[in-house]
Length: 52
Image 1: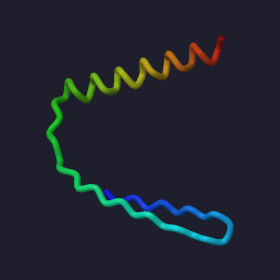
Image 2 (image 1 turned 45 degrees about the vertical axis):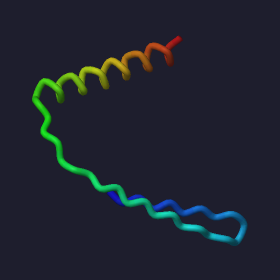
Image 3 (image 1 turned 90 degrees about the vertical axis):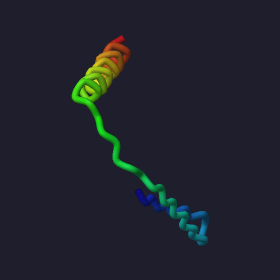
């Protein structure tokens, strides 16, 4: 993963580049399902907060 960030203050521009080595990991189907359920629950919670 490589991320570049450009910062400009007045007329000076700075660029910072970050390189992160990532290794693949195996995921069980239940782990993926659990993650999706957690994301959905977070979305429901946010919608409830917004409606109040």
